[in-house]
Length: 276
Length: 267
Image (cartoon, rainbow over all chains, first blue to last red; front, side, top):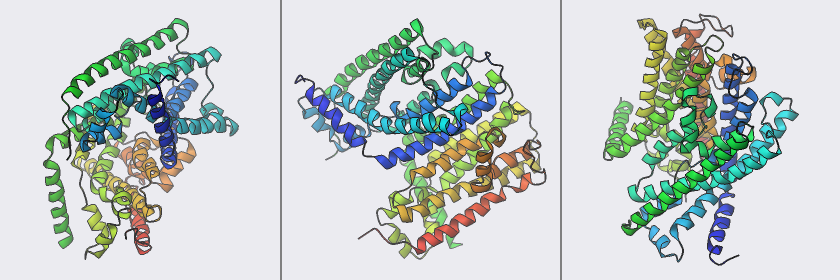
């Protein structure tokens, strides 16, 4: 491994292993997500019972799969900045971050990526075991998390999920830097949470919003966190559509990293240390 | 009388403390408002695409939604001490001090903190009720207003009861149990839609075990002048919020049992 990458890889591995230790939190999160997912599935089923097949932009089984996927991968969305960094800003420990002989942006970025993936992994596996494996075995086939449309869809989905981690981490960085500027991250976090719920697909698969909003919904950055990979998964985006989706995710990743880096340079140049 | 006097003192101290940081309080309230009102957007989008479902219109759903939000906002405002009980009292050993004071522990926990940011959710609930009223062209007469207030009393009692149960569990688990969020926040989520949309076992859970249906679904049907598609008799509907008060009473029995078994973690 080249020397330049080694500290970042070590930071990733350390944070990843640390976050995997919070098993009780993972189980609690999983229980909550099952409850939420179950309610959503029942509500969708009631609404879809109204519609003739072929009339809806996506089918009920696709919506159900989408719902379980969204619950499984909930913590992979950038809900808030890294709590350890906002803590460090308030205590003044951020000074140590500036003393490390490495690039602070990359350092925080890697930590954010590890933080999110390690929390998502156990929850996703639990959800897959329950909604994907146990449900069909219990005869709840109609309510289960279905496999991807085909092998190609799965491969593209996997690629898209890698981009989710990259773009979410880039967005977490923007939140981290805003925490450095404002010292109190709670206001911006709740604002971002509202936008994420509404526009990522967390609230409702974006395809179910009114038709006149669809173009806007696909282009706006929040679709990259959730909706694009899920559409690819169930075959809603294929061929050039899938390629365009991946390109959009890559585009937003680059935009957020460029903005984040430039902003960080400016903020760090006039960093005021708190604490004493 | 001293209890009421004490509560007003607790209340004014807590509110004055939060008003020292008006910006933060306003931001948090606005955040609560936006994150909770978004759910109604989903209901709106689904109705826009699919039309009425099982005879329910958007206005009906908005009424369920608004009523449960108001109940939960008030309960959350009153029961912060119970909500935080594990982390702030058991783990730290601070509950010892509470027990030493010559007033009931429950009173002190209610007075522990009143979060003004809950106004955000309360405002959301009231606005959504207004939306429902406009959408259904509902006439509010004295009987309906009384029934709505009674429903909210039952709802507040139920949610406070859930928080008391959560706190009681902390006597054994030490940590606050996050799993209880399923029944509080998740309960709000479940009660936003009419019970008739749900599977039978889930419906029974929400009527007989955690009687959320009794503080939202049944009484709101009476407010809407709708018969229950599940077949509950019309005379029963306005009485159901009493289940919330019963739930609260049971939760305080459990709480007293928990207090009697309490052993301190402090040193």
